[in-house]
Structure formats: C-alpha cells, structure tokens
Image 1 (tube, one colour):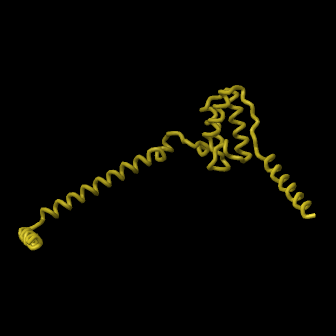
Image 2 (image 1 turned 180 degrees about the vertical axis):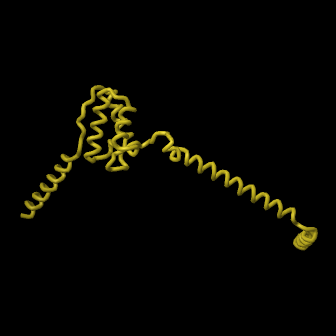
Image 3 (image 1 turned 135 degrees about the vertical axis):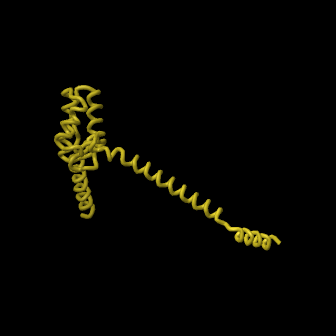
Length: 160
C-alpha cells in the first residue's frame, strides 16, 4: 500500500511538471529568410515590453510582448525598415518602448547629463584643490620671525 501511494504521488508530480512544460510559450513564427530572422530578433531585443518594463520583447512572457514580437516579425517580413517599425511602436506605446532613446531635445538631459555632472564635478574638485594649495601656501608664508626662532630652538633641543 505504501509503495502504491508513493508511485501515485510521483505520477501526480510528473503530470504537474509536464503541464508546466507544455505551458511554456514558444514562438513558431517562420521568417521568409534567415536575414529577416536576425533583423526581427535584433529589433525585438531592442524594444521594451510595455507590461513588464524591465524586459525586452524576447525575454518577456506576457501576452502583450508576444503579440508585439509577432507584429515586429510580420513587419520585418513585409519589408518595412527598422525606423518604420520603431516609429510604429513609439507612436503606439511612446518612447518608453525603446531601450535606447533617440537623441533629441526631449532626451538631451538623459544623454548629456552624465557628461555635465562629470565636468561640473571635475571643476569643483579642481577649485577645491586650488583653494587648499593657496591656503597651504599662505600658512607657510605667514610664519613670523618669532615663530622661526621658536622652531629653530625646538629643533636644537630635539637634536642635542
């Protein structure tokens, strides 16, 4: 009886795993050429899933990503250029669907912001170093004759 129960529970686990494997989405789209396949996969990798946000169309398992992936493949096979396909997607879902946003007035801060922060940081660092050097130079020149005599006396005492 115990062996039969063990066999029955193993069979149920196997059926559950088999069901999960069967549910994995697989695209069966057939491209017209190998070149179209490479271009379609590249475009799908560069476009973001509108539902999952941090996954591209290839990695996402959402139904929206699957539909968009198939739409991209179909547009590639129709002979549309990459710009036309990206324009179609951005018109429909906004610039959010692009992993690499276009370089225009709206994204200027995004592209040039890190460079501006680096230049400002470098400038502030150089000004700070310059101010410290000037402060140090003033401190050494501000030594009076009395200070020099006292320093020489201290050195003599230490040596002798």
